[in-house]
Amino acid sequence: MNVIIDLCVVPMGVGVSVSEYVALCQREIERAGLVHEMHAYGTNIEGEWDEVMAVVKRCHEVVHEAGAPRITTTMKLGTRVDREQSLADKVSSVSRKLAP
Image (cartoon, rainbow, N blue to C red):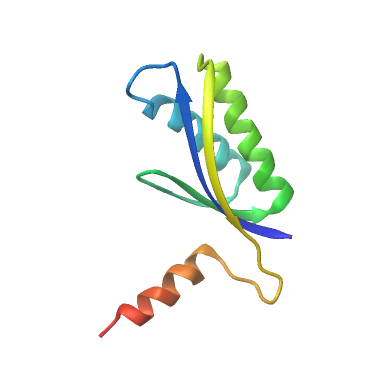
């Protein structure tokens, strides 16, 4: 089953700036070869359920390995079985409706 998630991994106990830790997580997503798009407060990821969940776990592992004693993560996810739909499809659908 495919899933689209919006993932926000927030390391705690590492100071105010967390971009170094976010970059570690982004590298793991890229290594996994999953379709993704980073935005200001997280990353949208799409792919097969087990692969996406494995990269979420890997993000936690590398951020802890880098010294974050605690992590809080929020995740929204959606699945669809009536037809295939990608991140790009979802954005295009709304963009078409916004066009004059």
